[in-house]
Amino acid sequence: MLHPGGLLPPSVKCLSIRYDDTVKHLKKIANMVWLNPHPILFETSIGSIYAHGVLFAIGAEISTLLLFNFLKRLKIDTSWCFELVLAVFFAGLLGARIGYFISYPNQYISPLQLFAIWEGGLVSYFGILTGIWVAYKLISKKYKKISERYRYLDCLVVATCFGWAIGRIGNYYAGESFGIQSSFFQSFYGRVPIQLFEALSTLLIGIIGKFYLLNKNLIPGALTFIILASYSFLRFIIDIWRDEILIHGLHVSQYVSLVLLIISLIGHHFIYAQNRHNVFTSK
Image 1 (tube, helix red, strand yellow):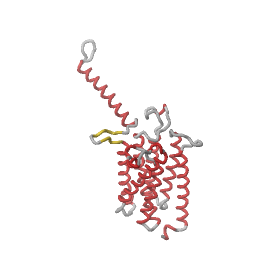
Image 2: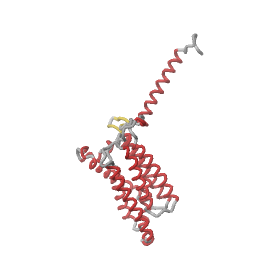
Image 3: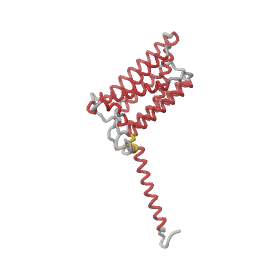
Image 4: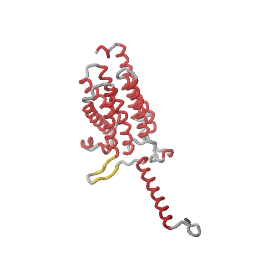
């Protein structure tokens, strides 16, 4: 009921002010959590909890669970998949970390920095190549038949796409791999959110890859190279907006993308050449 003169009672007016303040605070928190880079999630008595490290760990766990699911549905041995993931995880992590200091030598201070992954500083391509190389070596020791090796690798690569997407979101919150400044993306700290673009692209690749892995009878190994080629092509496009020095019109990451794209296409051709010569059925 309105007071004389049409004014709100003091109690209602107070509630209205509190409601407005609450909405403002919630909007502020949402903006901080969802849009603006926020490297530290929260502080504890023993130290800081970093968004990059947390999301990286969540991504690794999801990839592991998906790999187990894929192997089980394709009736492939799952007894050692956790050991494989653990080895590939640390190999890829170490490769990506070493790659970061090779790419940015001015950031290197001491060998102990290699293990400080919660601070960010990973170069994806080094991690990808190191992880795949270690994975294939370990899988080759377990399986002698080439088709079984490639099929296992297909499952691993598809599962990794989902974890990679989550890890890239952590990369965004860590404030790494900046995009160029743009007023259009003012909500994203005024820069093109290339990390989120890559996360979305990798997620879509993973979803499509999962469909073909479980529903299409592709030649073993073909899916691995298709995914690598797709990722390289999309990274080349996304990195157009990367905020780094250009070398002859391209960023360093774009040159690496082109190299990986060529390697992937050659690998894809090699897989089909092996299939034509019945390598998969004879070994």
